[in-house]
Image (cartoon, rainbow, N blue to C red):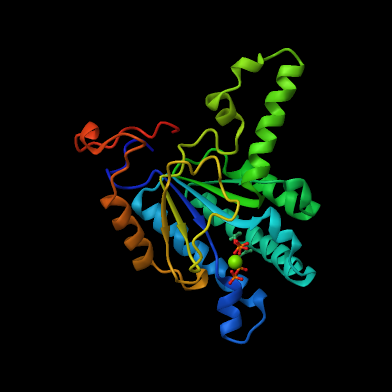
Length: 251
Ligand code: IPE
Ligand code: IPE
Ligand code: MG
């Protein structure tokens, strides 16, 4: 991942938003929008494979999305199940490693089993690291990291003065990946919606009005071009950088 061309993000994080509105504009049930959104997932994965982006984290379902009408949650579960059955062998063939973050114990056993087997099947792949955030919440992620450190302190494995940014980071989801360089949200809303709160500290944010099911390559290309033009200062001054971006301190 360290050999990608300059200006290409090593890790892209995406909030795939706008499925419901896409369907509502067509006077169709929201579930149809989610199904159309599954196609856009492939557009995004293909783009990362082509451009040599090493890691892609997709927000598929938030902790808060469990509160949606039962019918919509049920339709999403069916869609996850069929997508896992349909896509995993092809992802494996293309060298994609698949992983899930979030509270997976909240999913039905049928989905948990498919998540585990997808992870096991693709564990050795290295071309693209695909992370699906499902039943994920950034606050929950931070809370579980704090709890894990507290348990170590209680058991005498860690001193409380060893709790710092590094030990916290090591207990967060995605601890083994560089922090996202670029964040994209479709659907026109300018917010993070409890996605990777800790990990996005110095991520470049990019928003588009385009609804997720309409996602296309030119839009992703525009995001990459904008990203390549930005100066990432990580708190330093432009003069200090001397034209070179410093290493992301949290990577
Ligand atoms: C994103 O699309 C997918 C999920 C949250 C599961 P939405 O369903 O939030 O679509 P909008 O924002 O209502 O259009
Ligand atoms: C964020 O979208 C979660 C996912 C895309 C999975 P939401 O549609 O749930 O976010 P809000 O409610 O507009 O903030
Ligand atoms: Mg939404």
